[in-house]
Image 1 (cartoon, rainbow, N blue to C red):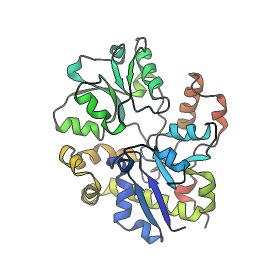
Image 2 (cartoon, helix red, strand yellow; image 1 turned 90 degrees about the horizontal axis):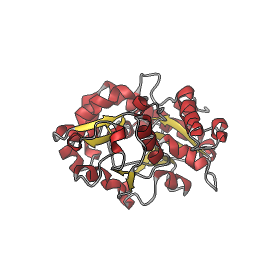
Image 3 (cartoon, rainbow, N blue to C red; image 1 turned 90 degrees about the vertical axis):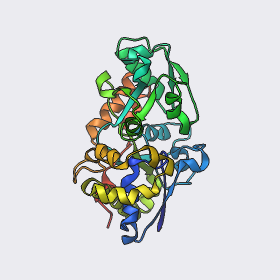
Length: 307
């Protein structure tokens, strides 16, 4: 195995910088591997990264940790496992335009929420509203995924979910004032997003190849954190020109780089943090307690190649 295909979770953005820096600096080629990236814009997000993994259109995929749970617990289970956490801390927010007068989640009752239709997403947002003293009575809409952010800007929706280090930077650069609400502030644990996941069966067939690529990715994120100016110069050619016009990549990386983790923690998942999120899902009756004993993540490939 000398080619690995990675399905991206979104059009190229700052969360992907380590993947592309590793490619541009030759980290994959150093270990005799060719890495190809599958951009969701190629099919207008008709197939999710998890589905591409399921169908073997991709060898690895980027997605929220929820996707790992979903694949393992659907009618025809897929032996998915998370092997790399892009961010050690949450950089996403539930947001509304400041001009909307929505000052806390409870103000979203009877308001329009533009949803990505991700597993648990709608319930998590409702839970934030309830935990803030509201009723959780959202009006849910499901626009085309690649256009959801624009529904907030055009005021077709009152609220949606964003990454602070991408859409948040775009809003900042355009003078668009947002009101942000974070999971931790409303008693909801962070479940790592995005993660890199693969099928256990495929990973076990080519341990050295996958370990090599995952460790090259880790080097890429480490380089981006330590050498932001160089990393931005390498990365920006991979970003869509329309995004380059709206988003300051240097600013996006400045917000993000400390969240990749320390040299020792880049990519790693904390068992306690994973368990807290799984337990929350069980407590809220969003999943069966069986998920608490499933093997859903591994740090093995970060620094333990079979060789």
